[in-house]
Image (cartoon, rainbow, N blue to C red):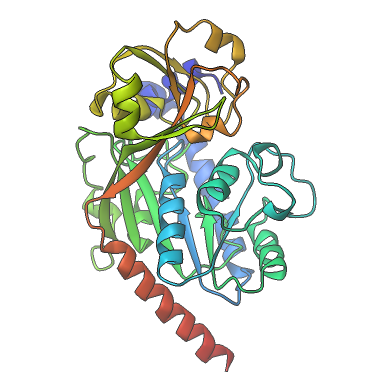
Length: 357
């Protein structure tokens, strides 16, 4: 989808105007078909022999699932777990059999987001549209894995899960309508069934409006946490030279820079850079999952060009000496939520052992 069409749909989905209302019959059809598919998947769900935590969203477009998945993986490993990652592998031609990072972790094999997660965590990754197949393949290849993290797997109910983390952003639930009249894959009330709701916000972005009470089960509200990303360092693509963020700012950050992003919400990346003191003279927005075109980079002025790690793994011009990939670290409003996640997974593992005894 082109950026122009994305912008048009975002504008339609931001309110309940005439264009959205005209699309309501298609939304009702989508809702019925989607609910039927989700129920069918849940009835035949495959139960992994280890706990499964799903990271997903109900909102179309990039909400920040990948940094949450990376943070969860790193936190669990620091607490003694041996995590594995399963994902769809969007953007790669997977074929009938699951594909594992053992054979290579590049974006062409795994898809850009699984490749980025593998590079950031070192955890084994398996990709396939059928997440249960990916999970089984990963566990067969890495039998020491004791927890699975399903990236972007919320609607893939054919893989049973023990815990759910839903990631949203400043849009909240938009106009509250299902596709194509709104931005939602599932009704707003789906948020209440999650264990955690992580809201990913730009530097100065306010919290989105609360979901209407009529849409949420008040007796089972998810635990909530806010995530904001902050630059941690930058890597020069052509040379591999890596600098902490303060060192990069001191050496290169005084002059105006350009920034390019092919992610779900490029403006959030640009806002993070500006909040960190970078003066952006030019910005380039590319459709999500697409490589930044080399000719578009050539049109940018001299000086550093800042891109995201997701763009770096599939960059069309990695030897351009102006390119720097900015690593960002999440800052959570409640860092203790990862300790709570650890405890909940240990309880799930204990239940699994008891059921299998």
